[in-house]
Amino acid sequence: MTDQLKPNVAMKMVLNGKEHIITFEELTLSNNLAQEALVSLLIKKQLIDGQELLDEISRIRKERYHTEPEQ
Image (tube, rainbow, N blue to C red; front, top):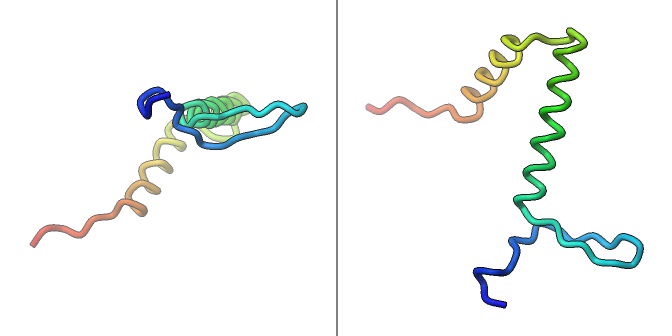
């Protein structure tokens, strides 16, 4: 198998004696789906609203990716 055809392996799992390869793409998709489901439930149950979530994402983004102004 050439390097281009090898999966980008994130982890390997053994289930019922059989090895399963999980790629970074599959792991990312799984995490995104779980996050989307959680956000949907929080909004549906009116524990948060959409704008509150967007505001918090913006606040965290500014904290984590703060850049110094050019001088």
